[in-house]
Length: 271
Image 1 (cartoon, rainbow, N blue to C red):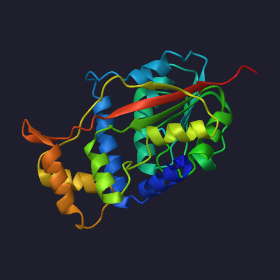
Image 2: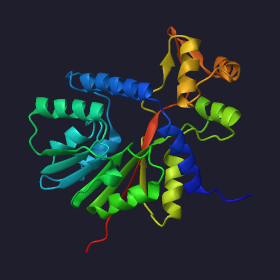
Image 3: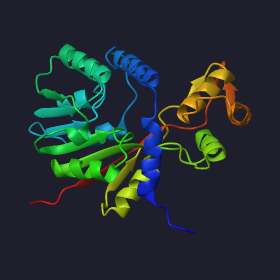
């Protein structure tokens, strides 16, 4: 068996992510705007063990670089704990939501950089974080190398963990000939090991959510979005697999693919 070229696999999967349409990007931003409203509603939120782990290792004088801050799901709780945060967020829609949330909380210790990470010029910080911010970069090692160079003390990288028996994996293997449908923890961690990094890993102890769709047609549309399929050429195959794998419960089709994330992290050597 030939060894896996993790760098080539990451590039291939990241290229597919880059091909998402402008319409898909607009839908993503609107989805995250709804998430922001829920976060700011005051209702009790589900625990986030990965964020809690990071918060427990920060102090009031810490400076933090948050790459791909998006709407600030991690950025704002961190800013409320530390001295200074620099948030890198190139997407205008995401940045607008982030700035609205910063203003509503009266935070004055957060600076936003509006260019992509690999183009950004930032000074070193104590801690550098990239939570689900690497999926569109084809050069993960270069991305992480720059992150590492900008951190004096600790680096954190969050990536999604695919379900080992997930429906999306089955669909991807059947249709695309590759079980991995997108950049993820398995590919990224092995690539970092091959590049000479030896990081620690903390994985969420249980899936934090499952997809549900009101109809099988909606589930087929979700699968096609996930696999970046634009025509109906594989609809019959998708429908057959979803009919077999999804469970109709409480008026909706429930996917068995449990969503969880992994935190890859390492402390820098003391100077």
